[in-house]
Image (cartoon, rainbow, N blue to C red; front, top):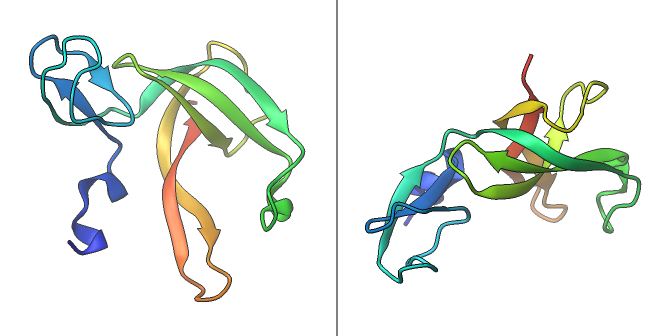
Length: 124
């Protein structure tokens, strides 16, 4: 399947249990509670910050991105997600509302291929 055809590349996708309606991110084929099959579900990408930290260290190749903020976000649909917070983070706080944005993650040094993914941004 071509990468452009994968729903999860440009949408914030999880799964929902057909039986008990529990929502998972990342998605999984079966519900961990009732063990029934799940189906793809597009998530809102909206949530609230439960906790956060400012990171001053980075893996090799990502040193130019420090410092950066990482937050644990509880999505409107229920799952908790860890992700980078981008944009103006000077007003970040626990309880602040956020939404997902599609941003550059990194560049492949050998091929120059740019990889994109979801990050969080503070609501106005």
